Image 1: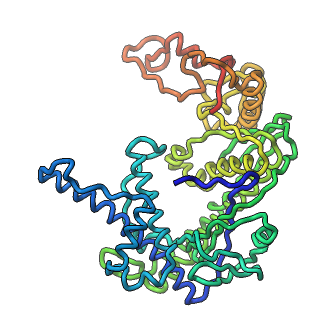
Image 2: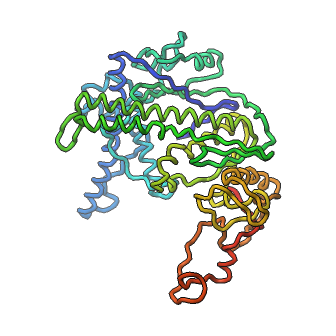
Image 3: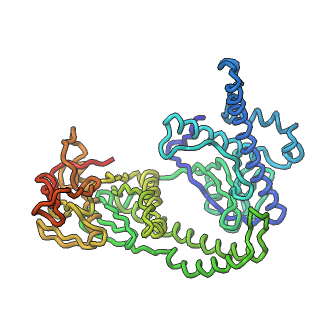
Length: 485
C-alpha cells in the first residue's frame, strides 16, 4: 500500500482530546473496540488455517503443486473474505450490524500489518528483533482502540464536541478550539480519528494534515551538544562555550512513597486469579484504579517535561548533536534501570529529530555510539584510556584541564558537528575519504586483559602487558578521524 505523503508545506500532526461519554456512548465505544479485536482474531485464524492445512497435507505425502493454496493477508483480500463470512459465521451474524464498518476494518488492517512484519522479519528485510507470527488478542489484556478513516469525522462548531461515525456526537473534556480554528481557516484537514481507552478514560486522537510555516531558530549559526545523564537530565553546551544544565526532575522517585502505599493496599484486597477463576472484588478494582492514577500522573509529568526541554532546545540552535545511546542495553543494569527509564533518553532523541526537521528545518546530528565524548579532553583533544563512571570530574594529564565530566562531554559533542562540516578540530572529519586502520583504542569497546599463567617480576599477580598494550593504556592525543552516522 502506498504511503500517504502530505502536500508541500503541510505536515501530519495529531490532536488528542479527552472525552466525557455518557453510559450509552461508552457502551458503544467498547462495542466498536471489541469488534476490532474480534475481526483481528478472525483474520489471524483464517490465514493461519491454510498454513496448518498445508503442513498436515505434507505429512500425507501430497505433492507441492496439489497442496492447499496460501491465503493472502493483504487488507483488500481480508476485507473481501470477512464480508463474505460475517453473514453466515455465528460469531458475527447476530451483532455485526451494530457497529461501524470501520471497527472491523481496524482489526483487519492490524492483522495485515502484523503478517507483513512477520514475513519481512523472516526474510531479513526488517530491522530489530525477530518478529513472531501474529497471535490472538486477549479480551482481558488488549487495549481498547478503534480507528475511523471514512464517514462523518469532524470537530463541532461549539468547540466542545466531536462527531464520529455511528457513535454520534461526543462531548470533550477540554475545548477543541485550536483544531477548530485551523479547520475553519482552511489550514488543516482531518484525515482520520482514533478512539482509545487508556489511563482510565477515553481519548479521541485526530490525525490532521496541517499547514505549518517554518519558524526561524533564535541562533541558527550556533551548534549545541547534549549530554544525557541520570544525575542531570541534560547538559547543553553550545559552540560559543555556554553551558546550561537541566536538572533531572525524577518524577518516579518522588512518587515512589505514594506508589508503595497504593500497591500495599492493592495486595491486601481480593484480586483476580485465572487459575481458580476468582474474580476481583470491588475494593480491589477501586484500589487498583487509585494506583494506576499515580502511574498515569507520573507519565504525564514526564511527557510534559520532555516536551518542554526538546521544544526549547530545538527553537534555539541551528544544529543539535546527540549521542547514539544503547538504551536497551543500559536498562539491563539493575542498579540504574529504573532511573534510566524514568529519564526517557530515547524519547528525547525522537522528539528532537522531528521537531528540528519539521518545525525549524534545522538538523540533528547523531554521534557514533563509540565516540569517546566523556574521555576526550575538550581543551587539547587528549583521550583517556579509562574513565570510570564514578569519576565525575575530568582531569586532563596533558594540558591540566579540570572540568565536570558531563560539561566536558557536551562540549565535545558540540565541537563534533563543526569538525564534521569543516574538517578541523579535535572531534573528527566527515569528509575523510578512507578510514585509516588503527589499533583498538578508547573509542571502542574496552576489553579486559587476561593474566598470564607464568609469574614474572612485573605487575601484581605475575601478569605483564605487551609493549602495544602499554601504549594503549596511556592517555593519547587524538589524531585519527572519527565519523558520524
